Figure (cartoon, rainbow, N blue to C red):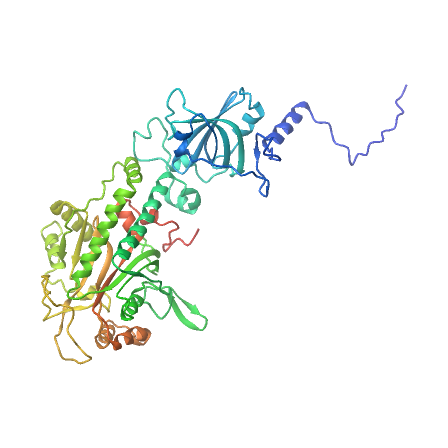
Length: 548
C-alpha cells in the first residue's frame, strides 16, 4: 500500500538531523566556549567582558605563596605553559618573572572532566584567575620559580588571548646561558619582530629587568639632585626656530609660524639659571632629526639634563655630576641586585660594569696621547684643534682606560672649541686652567661687549663622560655674556635672530654656570652591556621606525 501521508514540515525551517559525531563536536564546542554566569556556583569558564557581578576577592602574588601553604588562595596571571595529560591539566601561571605550576585534576571531588578539557583549551598569554590549595610538591618543579604548587578547584579566563601569537614567550625568553637552556631547542626572535609587537615583547623576563633598572636610574638621579638643592623644571618642546640653532631638528608649521621640536632643553635651562633658580634639572623627551642608523642613536630619547651656577671653577660642576653618576651606579647595584644577578646569569658573556672610587679625568690632550701610544697612532693628528674622537677611537680609548685604570667609567675634558656648540665657553690665553690644573678663579674674562681682552684659543671648557668607551654625557661651561654669545653664534654661521630671545637674556647679568645632558637609554644600555639602545627604549624611534 502506498504511503499517502502528507509531509507538513516546512522545508525552509526544518534542520537536518545531526549525526552522533556532529552532536559531540557541537557539545565540545559549546563546552570550550563556556561563559561564567554565576561565580558562586560555576567552577570554570570565560568571564564576559562586561560582567558586573564579580565578587570582591583578595589576590595573592606567586612570590608570597610560602606564607600560604595549605591555604586556599586566588591568583591572577597569564597562561605561560599548558599541558593536558589524561585526567590532568598542568597550567603554568606567570606573573612577570614568577612562575607557578597549577594542577587541575578531574579525579578530584571538586573538579570534572569538562573542567580539565576546558582548561586544556586555553590559549597562551590569556589572563586567568585560579583558585586552589597551595601545596609543597613531593619533588621540586624545575620549570617554575615557585617551590609551591596550586591544586586548582576553580579557573576563570578574564581575558582570552588570540591563539595565533607573533612569537612564543618561551622563545623570546631564550638566553645565552647554555646551562639554563640545557635540553631545550633554542629559537631566537629577531629584533624587528620584537619591536613590531612590543607590547608582547615587553612581557619577556629580561625586558622587565631592563625597564625596572631604567626606572631606578631616574629615581636615583632625581633623588641625588634634590638632596643637592636642585629644582626640577619642565621646559617647552615646541620651539620657534631651532633649539640650538642647528639643522638636526624636526621642523613643522605651528599654525602660521615655522617651528621645531626641541633637540635639547639647553637654552631654557640657562634661562632658568638667569632667573636665579641656581640649580635646575629636567627629565624629559629630546628629539634629534639625525639619520643615524647605529646601535646607539635614537631620534627621540629621554634626556636627563641639569644646569647649575658655580663659584670658582667649572670643574665644580664636573665633580658634582661625577658624584651623581656614582650615586646612580651604587644605587643600582644595591636596589636592583636580584635583577642584575638574573640579567648576568642570562648573559654570561657580558662583563659587569666596573667603576672605581676616584674617577679618571683626562684632558683631551691626555686622551689623545693614550691613543697615540696605541695601534691608531698614525690616525691622531699633531694639531688637535680641529679634531674630535671618532666612534672607533672612543671605543679604543675605553679599552685603554680599562687596562690602565681598571674602570669602565671616566671623564674627558677641554675639547677643541670647534667640536662644541656655539654657547660653549672657550678657553682664553689668560685662562689659568688651560692646562687642566685647578686654580682659584677661572670663571671667565669680563668682556662687557668690547673687543678688548684675551683672544680665544681653540679649546673649550667642556667635558664628556664615558661608559664602556661610549659617550653618555656631554656638557660645558656656558658663555654668559650676550656680546660674546652673539659673536660666537655668528662665527658658527647661525642666524642670531632665530635665537634672539636666548641671547638677550644675558644682557641683564648672569652667574657663571655649566651643565650637561645625559641620554637615559644609553646609560642603561652601557651599564648592562647591551649591544643596542633600542633594547632600552620602550618604544624606540629611529630613522626607520615610527610605530608602534
